[in-house]
Image 1: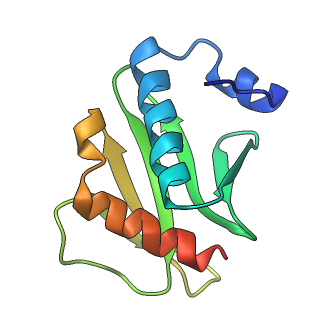
Image 2 (image 1 turned 180 degrees about the vertical axis):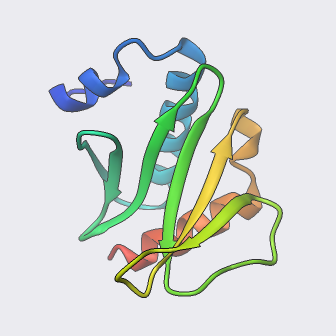
Image 3 (image 1 turned 135 degrees about the vertical axis):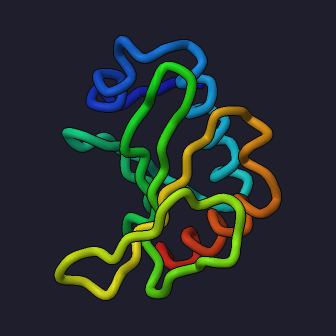
Length: 120
């Protein structure tokens, strides 16, 4: 999987093979949902369709952290480790930590689809 964008390549530099594999798996999961672009900013990688709808905010040695902004908090699930209101906005950031490819399960993919729809 090519990370053609230089900023993305810079962001992925010095990241572990494990977290890059998770990142690539996330990209493939998004691409199975629909037409997705991604680009690196200083501290994160944003995924977008028409507008940004998901962010990879951290890549650890054996995990990646993803944030999905929604207009309401989705409390009733097993996947989000924290949900925080975004100051000055009506969004709630939903934080996911992915350790294994199978963590991108049906429940998580359902939320990724919802986020994707919001990005259209």
